Image (cartoon, rainbow, N blue to C red):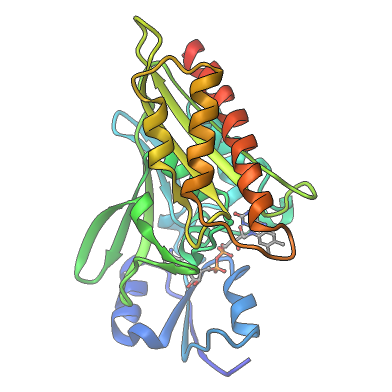
Amino acid sequence: MKDFEYFTPTTLKEALSLLSQYKEEAKIIAGGQSLLVVMKQGLVAPEYVIDIKGISDLDYIKNGKDGLKIGALTIHRAIEKSPIIKKKFKVLSEMEKNLATIQTRNWGTIGGNLCHGEPAGDPAPVLIALNAKLRLSSSRGERIIDMEEFSKDYLEVALEPDEMLSEIQVPNPQPHTGTAHEKLMVMQGDLGVVGAAVSITLNPGDGTCKHARIALSNVDSIPLRAKDAEKQLIGKVIDEKVLDKACQVAAAEANPPSDVHASAEYRREMIKVFVKRVTNRALERAKKG
Ligand SMILES: Cc1cc2nc3c(=O)[nH]c(=O)nc-3n(C[C@H](O)[C@H](O)[C@H](O)COP(=O)(O)OP(=O)(O)OC[C@H]3O[C@@H](n4cnc5c(N)ncnc54)[C@H](O)[C@@H]3O)c2cc1C
């Protein structure tokens, strides 16, 4: 690994000032679980490494009238175990429980996971299904971006060189909404061969689908929102025929890779299986909520 200069800021302002000074030559490190891998592989060789783990102001989970706010430095295990998340945003806690091992969840951060831009990552599709937004901060100011706009390509996200992810914002769920997530794991805690997150909101009167959000992992170079499949559900009572059609459309929308874990063809079949299973679970929850 190439030598680098190492900084340990303790405030966001200090970290952003270093980032605005060194821009492309610098890399943020949070848990280091993904960054150190790509540094060891020589894919990234920063001159300056800015370690943000000491910025305690970016480690929080809050819920109020304007929704859930998660600081970028919050570790996966804290999200999994948070009582307010278990109560109001259960799908996030369920997703985290299947993310890697407890050791990894105890050190890896939600911000690091999203900024790494891994299309097989678990939090991104769930946050897309939940219609989350991200707060990006720089010395120039702040901007808010939709989670679904954040991933640009394989391991590429929409951060400017002087920007950091500071907060994840999830709106409070509407009444009659259910959300679910599941991934195909070879072993418990593995990255999903395919993952699906679905959120359904029902019209209470006639039981038709008011809103649907379907997001998939590891089926394209970015976490994929299957908008055409969503259109198959909206305005209809979701029965088996409607859902089967939506699953076929979702599989057609994806551009899955073939790799050592699965062929593209197998992944397409699994999209159908997982979108169906996860939509049915989201639907059950929406009927109760
Ligand atoms: C054994 C193992 C198993 C795993 N299994 C899974 C899994 O099943 N599912 C899954 O989703 N993930 C999995 N991961 C990924 C793991 O969750 C992420 O590596 C981890 O969450 C990344 O967070 P980190 O804090 O270590 O980030 P780092 O490695 O420190 O950073 C990752 C990238 O994000 C950038 N970055 C970090 N924080 C910020 C910020 N606030 N603003 C701007 N840029 C930032 C860094 O510069 C770097 O480019 C696994 C990892 C390991 C090691």
